[in-house]
Image (tube, rainbow, N blue to C red; front, side):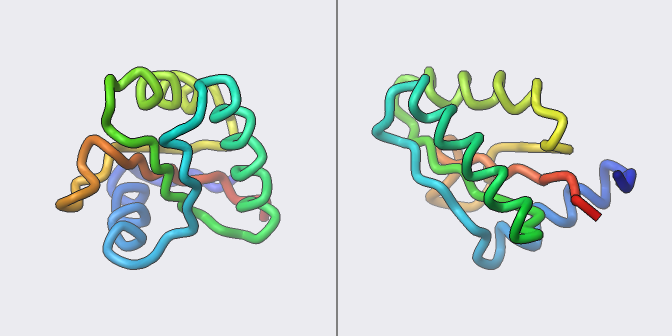
Length: 102
């Protein structure tokens, strides 16, 4: 896997945050089901060579967001992730940078 600097990873997410990143909407799912769907989406994205995915988890109590962040931290296929800073998405959306299969 290619190594990226923190600035490079941030630039990749930022460019997709401004554009249209492939997304998955998990905001009304139970945590266990959301994580199963997210894992499948990550694998699907990697097969399609998509580097960034937009994870919509909603605001609510923050439990789903926290569970997703904790899970992302354990995934070797996820190089970097962060909350969106885009107006209307902050606190409701996370962007994840995926490792490349190449």
